[in-house]
Length: 427
Ligand code: HGY
Ligand code: MN
Ligand code: MN
Image (cartoon, rainbow, N blue to C red; front, side):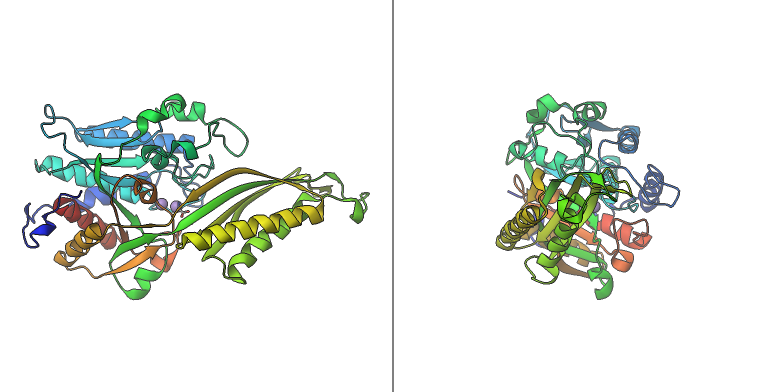
């Protein structure tokens, strides 16, 4: 149920004068960009890493410094809300907004953190102006959205949405180190994930503001993207086991070379999308081999396979095809394959009423806009299990992301946050 002024199209429940503080938002984006920044300008704040802990502490500090409450749930999500001014008479539903603070390795300065800081800005403007809404506004920074260190992407939003059975019972990083201690350091508790679950119906709506991370808005010359669907995704972590050996003395027909097997798997994954068109995109972004020594045959290889499509049927079929190709390659190379982790996220549609509210807000602000699907995955697609979702995009310069060159103009960053505020006021 969305409490919406949209039923009376022209009512403006709140003064149009409410605006985000552009300098404060842009200043925070710049200061967070320094957390985890490397010499080449890239930012590395993998979920639950030390740099991620620094960003978490900075966000909690910013929220508390402006009089908001900031708490961490058992999954490590940071939830920011206004201090309760007495018992909540109506047990209002929550209007949730946010994104994630963690990044991929050598990332840009906007993916995720922009949406979190814009949500903080919206809550701060509402608090400063004493504006009360029919729903309680809550800002959230979801834990480990990227899954860069601990390969369980959407960890925090899956917990909040109650998808605990899809989370590994013993979550570990790529080297087998347990998530238990890093999660505890972030304020979470692996034994109490149940307490992080929000029941269906408790969240009236979820809004996520995010950079597009692609070229569509820039090419179309539009300032705001109204997202209609978010891509589905299957992420497989595959371990290939062969036999290491001497590169010089081991005959070619006596080898069980994990590097060769992995290399064929990488091309099979690309082939499935590029030649056979079985899904929109397919990527192997991470490949590690052991002993990784120039004159030794690789005994093991570990690769992550990322398959994406907005059609659930195509996604299911391409995963089956890739698994079959991997099985055949393992037979041909005498290697063994183990699937260490599989994370699937179904394609989701955003809520029509929220798309309308976002569009109306953009028009009121005189901003050009267009509807488009998201090729990137987002926490919103997990929250969609328990609430209607809406996503607002701003253009990515050059359409690039997950690289230090990721950028969006200050004007577009401010416009996006202004649309978020307006949409919150009208939902
Ligand atoms: O990979 C993605 O789609 C997102 O950046 N997590
Ligand atoms: Mn990302
Ligand atoms: Mn993101």
